[in-house]
Length: 85
Image (tube, rainbow, N blue to C red; front, side, top):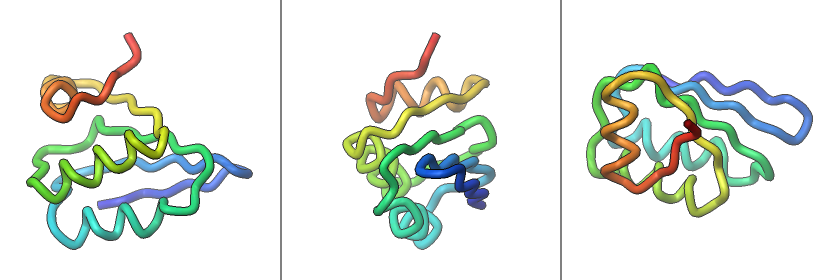
């Protein structure tokens, strides 16, 4: 599930549950024109290959990521997304 908050030019996206298939596609569509993205990975429980691709695409677009928990940390290591310490 995607929760999207628009604050002026910044978009904050909270991801919860599974980032798979069409949900991953929706994430790219919802954020493709954003100039500043903040992605919260704390609520994710599963990400498939399409979800990985969406996160890498967001990373390449300059998004900043944050998230608590073992899954978020392992996910970021897997797709080479830096998390703030």
